[in-house]
Length: 260
Image (tube, rainbow, N blue to C red; front, side):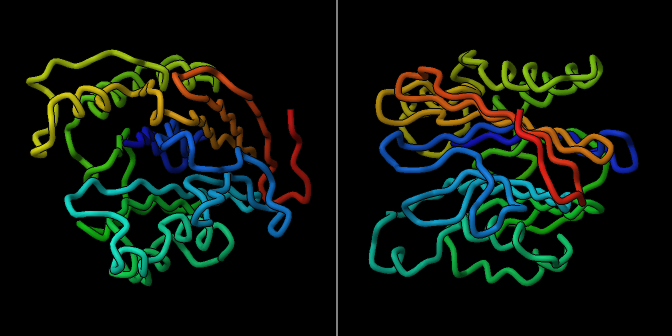
């Protein structure tokens, strides 16, 4: 039940601002955000089970993130095991040079379980979903979770409103991380109707999920500003216990990045 809140203002001094929560089983091994040894220009976490990553940026000014698309049907079947990891999509885009539009158009969606993919190449921001549509996005504030872009889940509605307010106050990294820590529980009447137990819907409804075996593993703030990308990641262990916080500043198009 990941959440990606983002504001896109092309042509401004801050063309892209992102606040994202990665929700996952705590037992699934992963590395936090770091510069990859095999691709030093790439800054992202790394999934050690299936490979790839869920969110990352590059010194060339590229950004990508993916969320799973909530859908019925068993995972782990023989047919499912033949499908590729959705994290490969983010990795491939960040390592490549195709425009966001061209990359989205070339994705073979049937090779993956349901996904939402957000791509920024420094000029255009593109959303694509193998259970929905592909769209070049215009200026605005958006929220994306495990349904199609535009779905009015409470964490999306409340999160985009909160991000809009922060932008008016010239939001900083810490403010974005605090936004992602919201544990407000919406009323049952506002929860999505997916034919799943109400107890489950309640548990995953807040922006920040605190659990024993599953919950928010990382909160990430990404700010594109001028020729710089600011990237902050706060990690969490079971029950929402805070772990390491790392911050990076990338000078886009330059040969080195400064880690705070």
